[in-house]
Amino acid sequence: MTQDPGINGDRLWQSLMEMAQIGALPGGGCGRLTLTDDDQIARDLFTRWCEEAGCTVKFDRLGNMFARRPGRNPDLPPIAIGSHLDTQPHGGRFDGVYGVMAGLEVIRSLNDHGLETDAPIEVVNWTNEEGARFAPAMLCSGVYAGLFDLDFALSRTDANGISLDAELSRIGYAGTEACGAHELGAFLEVHIEQGPVLERHSEVIGVVIGGQGQRWYDVTVTGRDAHSGSTPMEGRSDALVAAAGLIKAVQDIALAHGPDGVGTVGEMHISPNSRNTIPGEVRFTIDFRHPDDAVLSVMDAAIHSAANRVTGAKVDLDMIWHNPPVHFDTRCVDAIENVTRASGHAYRRMVSGAGHDACLVARRVPTAMVFVPCKDGLSHNEAEWAEPAHLTAGCNVLFQAALMLSQDSAMTSGQEVRGGKNKKETHPTVQEI
Ligand SMILES: [Zn+2]
Image 1: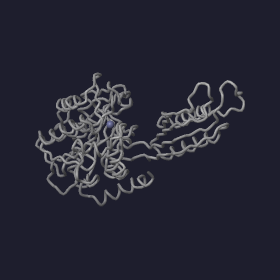
Image 2: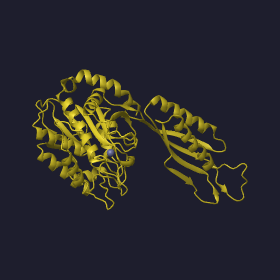
Image 3: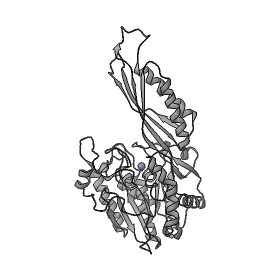
């Protein structure tokens, strides 16, 4: 389905493939960890491409990059499009990179068509989205949104004890502008779905209305170490058997709140982890997610009640993170849905299962996302694949939505009204975090 004026899908694909050469892996994927030499090369290339397209490129204290194409009215905050250029160690060519290259393609296409916008258009590259080298993920969009402190971000270290601050300086991307000082009028992010829903339904576009909430727990089950041969079954205090019951409870609770509810135990440490000793202590994690915070509260109550029912061992259940669901800005979502409908592509409204920079930026800036299908829902894998036609379709939606929002005086100059409304929707969730 073509849209006129539209973006150049071939050029978008070329940019993606050229960027994927930086940190290319033998299996066809990309391993470009944040703030490495490869990341520097990728940032430099992105800067060159943006400057060739007539943009001014700036970066803040955390290396978050903003490439601006001026608008007719320099006083208006920019309509920003972006994602991240860093990847997982064994990542693909599309996760994140597509969102940044799509932003660049929007600007190149605006130039091709000689289109002027009221508000400036910007392309953003957020630093350290993946969290693979410096935990946590979405660190620098998180500082931008006010969810993390600058010093917390700068002091994060990698497996070799090297700090994020040191690496930013080493590759020349520690800017002088304070992180968060750069105002955005709106933020749009296009991303591969990283799940199977669109492909399963033969849909081309996901209009993302928000991100699901998460509750993370640390669990410690304490029993008593004892000899596996000479201790009768009766009267044992086996921490692993108690933990197994709780893992089953996590599964049952998630299934009871399906299909939106999901629950995962992904990490476990058994002590002393010896085949002829009854485990005296087990520590494990729980990750519950659901789009509705009220349902997450029910899931929370259910796991506490399961923990209270455990006999023969002591259970400490500690919720270490409560990230409430994010509801994207109605005007941004409407803009995306309207242009998608006009394009004729099959689409659905959906909630993001994964975390994205947009989910954090949305706490501060009117935001929405677009998803396109990826093969078998596979991501964080070298085999990650998206059809060029789908990437083109997603970028066209972005192009039309950005054009609409950048010409929309209510979006860019009605700051008081819109800002107030947005604040009411999202501020309480910031407090809860
Ligand atoms: Zn991503």
